[in-house]
Length: 428
Ligand SMILES: Cc1cc2nc3c(=O)[nH]c(=O)nc-3n(C[C@H](O)[C@H](O)[C@H](O)COP(=O)(O)O)c2cc1C
Image (cartoon, rainbow, N blue to C red):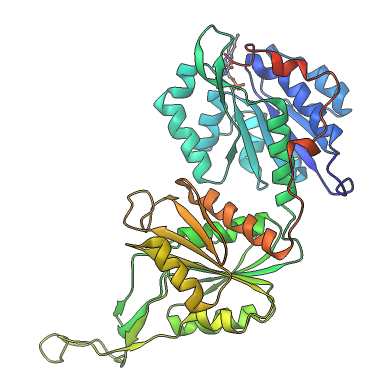
C-alpha cells in the first residue's frame, strides 16, 4: 500500500467489457483492493460470456452492475457514476471505446460511463488489426483529447495468433496508473489556483477591436486539470467559444485591464497562478464611443499604448506563492522562454513553438517545454488535456514536493505475478 494513504477515499468503478482479457479484470480488482481501494464492478453482456458476474460479486461483496433496468437500485448507472472517484475500463473493447467516443449509452457500462464526471482510465485490449483500424485510432484520439487516460495497449504476441499492438497492459501498470490518478485527484486539495485563458479584446470603437488567435483551449484544459487535482479554481477568461469547465468558477473579462483587475483580485486569496491567456500587448490610446465611419473619420492609423503586464505584476507580489507563465514563440523558443522567465520573475514558463502545425493556436494538441530557473523538460506532442495534466502535476509538486509513486510502492496480490510471464492470452 502507498505509505500514509490508507485512509484516503479510493472508490473505483471497474468496467469490464467483452474480450479474452476479461479474466484479468479479477487480478486488477485484487491489486486495487490490496492497495486500499473500494471497487465496484459493471460488466457488459459480452463480458459475462468470458467471466461470470458471481466471481466479481464474491471478490467485491457487492452486486455487479449488469443491466440499467434489472437492478436493485432504481437508477443504477447514476448511482455508480456518482459513487466513483475514478472509472477504470479494463479490458476495454474496440466497441466500448467507440461508444465512449460517440456518447452512446445503450447498456449499463456505456450509460454509466457517459454519466461519470470523475477521471476515466481506459486499458484497451484487442486484436492488432482492430487496434490499428483508423476508426479505433480516431476514437482513441478523441477520448484522449477529452482527458481520458489510456494505459496501453502493449505490443507482443496475441491470443488470436497475430503479433502486434493490442495486448492488455500489464496488471501492475494498470493498477499503478489508477492509483497515481487517484492520488493526483487530491494533490491540490485545499489549494486555490487562479488561471487565465483566451485572448483579450482591445476596443477601437463599439464594434471593432484588436485581438489575437488564442482559442483559450489550453487555459480551459489547465483549469479542468487543476479542478481534477482537487484545487479550488478561479478561471479568468477572455472572450472564447468554450463551455465553462465543471467545478470551476469563471470570471468573464474582455480587455487586458479587466483581466489584470480580476486576476489580482482572485490572486489575493490564491496559492498559485497559471497565466495561459494571450493578453494583447497594446490597446488603442483612444476608444471611440461610437462606430467610426469610413471616409468621415480617420481609420488609416491607430495610436497604441502599452497594456499592463499581468504576468510581471502577479509575479512581483507573489511572495512564496507559485506563478507559472506561458511563452508562445515563433523562433528561438527556449532561449526566449528563459529570457521571459528572468524578465517576469515567475517560477516556470511553459514554452511552445506556435509555428508547429500540431501546436498552433486553436489546435487540440501541443508540444511544450517546461522551463524553470534550473531545469528544462521537453515533452512530446500530446493532447492539450495531457499537457494540462503535466503542468498541474508540476504545480502540485512545486507547492508540496512529495515522494513519487513508483511500482515499488504498489502491492500486488501474491501469486498473480504468473500473469506477467504469459506472452499471449490477453486479447482478441
Ligand atoms: C473469443 C472472442 C474474443 C474477443 N476478444 C475481443 C478483444 O480482445 N477485444 C475486443 O475489442 N473485442 C473482442 N471480441 C469481440 C467483442 O466481444 C465484441 O465486439 C462485443 O460486441 C464487445 O461487446 P462489449 O464492448 O459490449 O463488451 C471477442 C470476441 C470473441 C468471440
